[in-house]
Image (cartoon, rainbow, N blue to C red):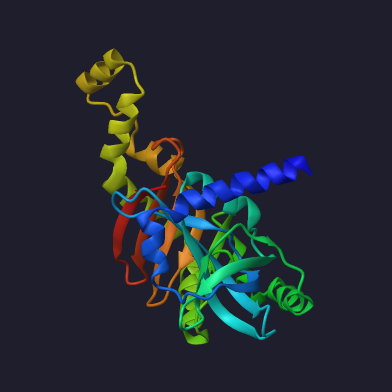
Length: 295
């Protein structure tokens, strides 16, 4: 009991420190003054935070898919956002307390549209039976069978469908965003066109990435190589990473297909860029318009 009391006191101190900040006071002006107790269904992700410019506090938020006004008993379904300004410690606390696909209880202030909520204190676990039914339906598996490509499952955390497919004898992930049916059909046609000419696209994409990034790969490699060895290879006209080695070390991980016949190929970098990913984008027209280091 003593430990629980100490924990509540510690949590309250975190909140009071944030309440005193200009960022929190500025945020609170967007909400109605009344304090409301709610229970809510959390979406596919927990709390996350973002900062802009020189801001000291995080803009912390979590998506909700339904909420219930404890006083009126009314339930609202849709897309909602629960948020607060938070320092590092409070953001970490909220990430521990609020898990994806869960039910929470909270004291909040609500905006006029009843779409956004300002959190006023740490959350507790919720137990509303009606919200439990909504959560049960929410977490059910969503699948799509695509002829010639296989069975795609919806990943709700990123809102895309994904399936394992064979590409040049190796299993990779094929993805497209959950969109309107017509948009998804366009993406599926793009996927089938790529799969029908794997050897051609595989060669063109790897060659393009090497053309764009080989010089950079050698600059990165030089930083990890003995200076004398770099000088010797330079005198011999040799590269630390050859064009052939670059293309071989790229390991395809994901193909993401988009509307308008566009696509992205994501590769592991083979340790050429210290573990970052390589992204190559283009379209079925044959245009390749970007090779970038990501992550």
